[in-house]
Amino acid sequence: MDLSELERDNTGRCRLSSPVPAVCRKEPCVLGVDEAGRGPVLGPMVYAICYCPLSRLADLEALKVADSKTLLESERERLFAKMEDTDFVGWALDVLSPNLISTSMLGRVKYNLNSLSHDTATGLIQYALYQGVNVTQVFVDTVGMPETYQARLQQSFPGIEVTVKAKADALYPVVSAASICAKVARDQAVKKWQFVEKLQDSDTDYGSGYPNAALGQVKVLWQEGASDHRRCPRYSAGSLRRAARRPGAVAHACNPSTLGGRDPKTKAWLKEHVEPVFGFPQFVRFSWRTAQTILEKEAEDVIWEDSASKDQEGLRKITSYFLNEGSQARPRSSHRYFLERGLESATSL
Image 1 (cartoon, rainbow, N blue to C red):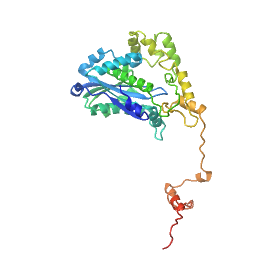
Image 2 (cartoon, rainbow, N blue to C red):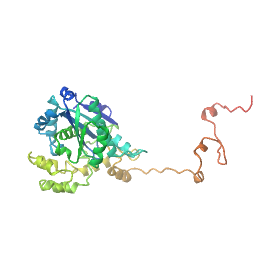
Image 3 (cartoon, one colour):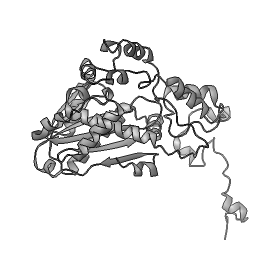
Image 4 (cartoon, rainbow, N blue to C red):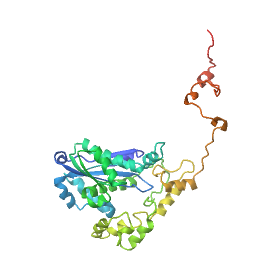
């Protein structure tokens, strides 16, 4: 996967895609949508679509695609390479930088993560249609309430059959394939991240990047060999059953090092790389509570001086700020251009 465009500019959004297989323009296709990196405090979130003809869906299943969270990194890389080698599978993805995510969420007009996710998924589906992919069915791993999300997508794409489900990446092979594309892209993006701040002797061993809210559950699950998926809501029973058929996959999928077990390492990295005045590098999602807590403790406070209280008394019309009239009129000072040149308004000719 060529991430050179992202490496040149990782401050916003980057879209990557495969060539569209010729068969996907001719035959009805099924398309899956999934993401990777929604929860961590570090690194980008990646949304991906994967599509193939309905007539070749069995061939996609034969590749043994599965929910990416149940696969070793080497397995994900191998499966992605196999999909790349086919003549019937296509993919596209959007890489959303931590900076884009945080500035969207903290802007004056709030743009929350669910809305960002929904719009990104919609954009990728539309992109596939613009590329000429003959999409007739779409399967999506839900964000938020599946019924609301499905109704929204169905309204955007009335001619396509849309299904939105929780754990879709474990239920539908085409969504599993999308989850593999997203996870492979995020893993590579994190490993090759170019710090625009040009940090000196930067330590890139920052752990998993995930907050440790469910760390205790994951540890127990890992120690017990993933015998009860209900103790780790991130995984469905089906995901763990499939993982159990691959030696070592359960231990990897539920290993604390995969889902926050090295979270203390992440927090240590955050504390080490917080600048007292300017905050974190753009690799950090500074809108996350974990980052905000560290900022509150480690960074300098900023005090914004209020205007004089007399300026706050009473309500004024908005036009009063532009018209020099009324009892609260203020004398206007000349622009610097006129002051520097000793120019004054002429009262008479």
